[in-house]
Amino acid sequence: DTGVSQNPRHKITKRGQNVTFRCDPISEHNRLYWYRQTLGQGPEFLTYFQNEAQLEKSRLLSDRFSAERPKGSFSTLEIQRTEQGDSAMYLCASSLNTPQETQYFGPGTRLLVL
Amino acid sequence: AQSVSQHNHHVILSEAASLELGCNYSYGGTVNLFWYVQYPGQHLQLLLKYFSGDPLVKGIKGFEAEFIKSKFSFNLRKPSVQWSDTAEYFCAVAGNQFYFGTGTSLTVIP
Image (cartoon, rainbow over all chains, first blue to last red; front, side, top):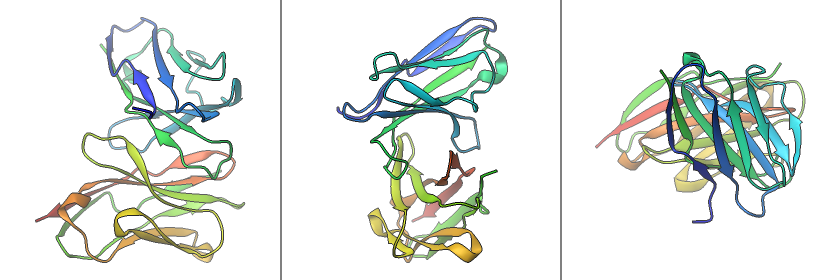
């Protein structure tokens, strides 16, 4: 399968714990996006990378959220000190170099914070 | 600020009925417009996109959308829906950032 992959697919954690999600984009794609989706809503843009550079992070929900893409390939999204309101589906997408290019989405990581 | 509005939250149609899903956006600059679909249990996937040129865009599975700049709209249409079109449909706009609408849930009754 050469699509976008995300791990884990499901994560249950207790409030206050840190969680980290991984996204592996399509190999030739140099743009990588993170979104959050809650029930009944569309995907909410969080941040994106072009290669290893994080070009937009103002939409990250709080300073508890951070993302990295150290070698311009896979990316991680970390949520520190999780809260119940962080429960959501976290989606990753990748694309080629320009905003006009189609974003290809992964299956998402569903987070439940107890 | 950019935003995207999808007016229909839930639509139920019988097979062979025509479909039109509304999408309006607010952004003063040049935009790129998309419709994505999410079939039950599957990833989001692109239906069609508009960047420039002919404002009537054709996508996969018989869908089309028309960009009307004066109305800030990008409505999705299909002349005859099938049961397999049952899915969640999202309009999205990329200006200086990327925004999705809240989605429209379409149920097609056989």
